[in-house]
Image (cartoon, rainbow, N blue to C red; front, top):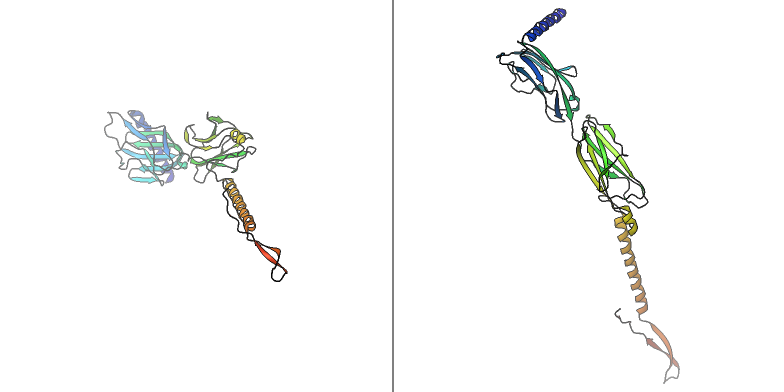
Length: 313
């Protein structure tokens, strides 16, 4: 029975092919490349084109395949499809000429080549198409390995961006002229969902003298998806002033430690001054020898030193 079915199918295809030759006014036209956004619905467009000679066309069979695997099949009143695949026209029927394929939630696995075969009462037609899936990369983030930067230190800047597809690249632009540093390389890693995570590092050599560092993420077509910048004071200017640069956006503990040390020193000095002043100005009793006129014997008179009086400085 299986062999008889295959033979019958082949005979049908031969007859249909002959009809196709006799009816060149009907053709299947597919968009060679369709674009799909990750996480959004995508459509692989295909239309049955007819001339005025063919007024009434009936679609009997449609077979959609993705990379050789069947994703949608319609044979008369029987319809079978893989999850997430359907006709782009919700009210599709055998008289509809729009046979486009709808992908409900586009993922990385939907990227690839598609083929569509249509059998009508006027002939059979086959065409191919492709879907190119893209995903925009997130805004890059910049981190530095050194929080307290000194004129003699080496600083490494790390830039990361993820969530994009296909694989893109990161670029560093240094200085006011925004010239790209070609020495930085991009490292790409594939995430579980098929999207890419990109990272790159830029090491600032000793004596660097540039204030703005911009990291740009480029998509596979070379277009810019997004960028981020980091401001660092110029090293030569800070070295002349004898100060360390403060990296904008970073939590540097030395910003707090220095004022606390100065205020603490002032408090200790003030307490020491008040202690010495109190000892010096304390009332003192000094014995002084004398003579008692009645008894004729010496006695001690108390010499009282008055309290110190405050004087204005």
